[in-house]
Length: 485
Ligand code: ADP
Ligand code: GLC
Image (cartoon, rainbow, N blue to C red):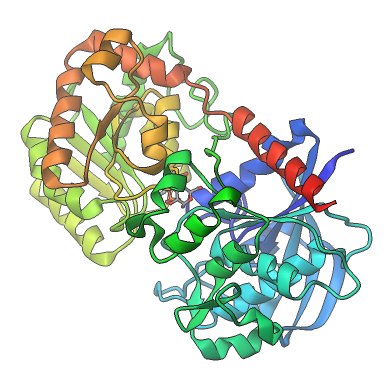
């Protein structure tokens, strides 16, 4: 018998994306399908999502979902089932999923995502007769209340199903003041240390972690790291107390979207045996960014310009990068001061550093296919996807040794080089010294073409597909459903 899973999240490609969460949620249904899991994804009805799904078929109508009219609409996410919460009062606004057009978080985010969680718990519990589910899988704080409602206020007449709380990033916890509790529609006993109460207010992620049958995070190393305050960010106590229910399951990549042999964005497609063809992509990338053409290493950066990603440290390493003959193409947006800093560096080093503060999926493919090395100096990284895309595309990752970066890149140390297994460069501690040393190591290896080719080929031959992790999730689903019987 197939298992029917409701995967609840605030983002999923190709409908709405601000980061890696969307890639993972969008890829999961296909990753689970070979394991006899039928996954329905549930998303909020942001304008972009409503536009993409068209009219849709109404599955369920709420006269008042935490006070506002709403409906559940059936649609498709690629070939897989999708349910969208159409609730204009909560989601029908211009701006990002979590913030207004100026970048300020919506003040009522707690209410928007509580309503989303309430509806997800109802759906998972059987509110729509024709849609039965065996398990609820919630991603990050925006979906965490689904798990809390399932535990503390299951749908009337519905059934309780087991649940998984997946943490994609512990830094975002969804905290709100104590007076929001009254608006959640939860029974009083939910206000406790083992419920939603957290530091005198309401903690969504915390509530999900307490209430879930099992907690997962997106790499084995991050699952260990969040046991300590530096990475647990206040929730380390729960991680430790629930360690028997904690798993680290590494993200995969969608190899249909990310395949250098068939990627239509690339001027020249290539594989491990035709790496010479990358030169054409490199030349095109230099031209696109207005960089001086050259045979020296072309570093790239793709990502959010934030403290998490170590972008402040990278900024201070740029003079060194240029000094040793490197060039940099950066695509990213984020904190205003960092954006300004990178623009200033580009002015200081014309032709050597070029910056695009935009969100451009197609360009990110061309960068992975033409850049020589991708820099990822993250202070913490639950999994990270750009180092996986880099390896698939022969763009050698230079990464901080943390979280999923530690789990997926094999450092080119002497032993690994001798054994011929290295795929990139790792460094310890995100400091100016460690990062500049790593850039210098990359530069030195780049000028040893045989070694460099080997790094590229090794990365390209790694299996980062979803096959292993799809099975790991499927096994976990089966175990939890069995335990719940
Ligand atoms: P995070 O989710 O923490 O931002 P990940 O590495 O898991 O980090 O995922 C980031 C995803 O977003 C990747 O698919 C990456 O290619 C993409 N991305 C980040 N910034 C940009 C951008 N400015 N333009 C295009 N894609 C981007
Ligand atoms: C988060 C993390 C990132 C991870 C992604 C998908 O955004 O910051 O490391 O790859 O989620 O799980």
